[in-house]
Length: 125
Image (cartoon, rainbow, N blue to C red; front, side, top):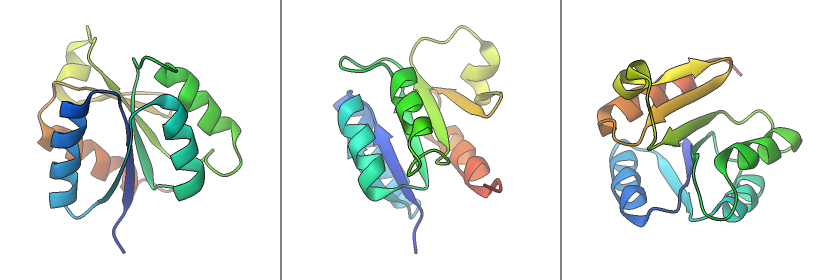
């Protein structure tokens, strides 16, 4: 059974490219175009991982993450934060971990995103 990834992002072009590449890698990809929709889809579909844009128009990604962490249904789903505003060179190059949170620049090559997804999904829950 393929691993399920939920992309929560309000940039259609980024979502389309990322969805296509992840599908090519054998992932079952779900999409939410807003934070509110992302919370609802995560609750309903319980993905194995959430790719979450930090900057969205309706609800900022950090508040979406807080909502997911507070729900008994979604509290243990790993989240990779996607950011287009990155100063840290390490984040730009290969993703970055702060505590149990993962960050990667949207401008990172898709191969790097896929490598980070693989790494996160291999960690024990």
